[in-house]
Image 1: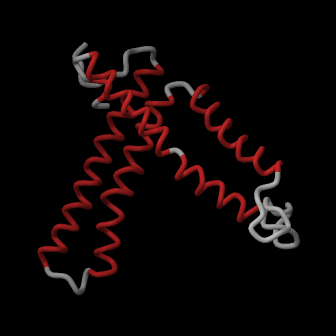
Image 2: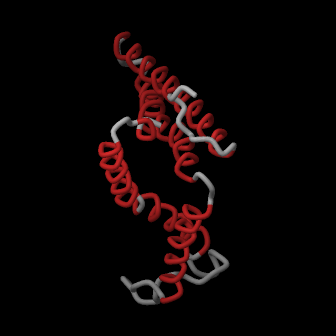
Length: 165
């Protein structure tokens, strides 16, 4: 939302290029996590799973050719989703408003409270509670404005919530 409302076009371009670089460099981590989960659930080999193993029979073997094609298909599928889903960037902002704050602020502080809450002092518990509340507040604001921008985009209007009509 902040990027969409920058007044200077040059600054907006620089920020967008940084966001593209961030997206390209942060894609491999969730990609490999998803592929590992998928392989563990579906491709460990018979009789454990329905499909054969993605790796060759020898120890330390490389991926089989069809497993490489499956990984390539996952990349192409995610690329096609980004291309063909209307207003994908705004949708990712909406999802990121929730998941980003939960992963960065809310869950770490909440789990710290649950695990160590009884053994830390009042000030540390209060800081954790404030972090959780701040994360929930930021999530709520981000979800509201991202949803507002998504509705405006689908109505054919410019999705810039901070500009007056």
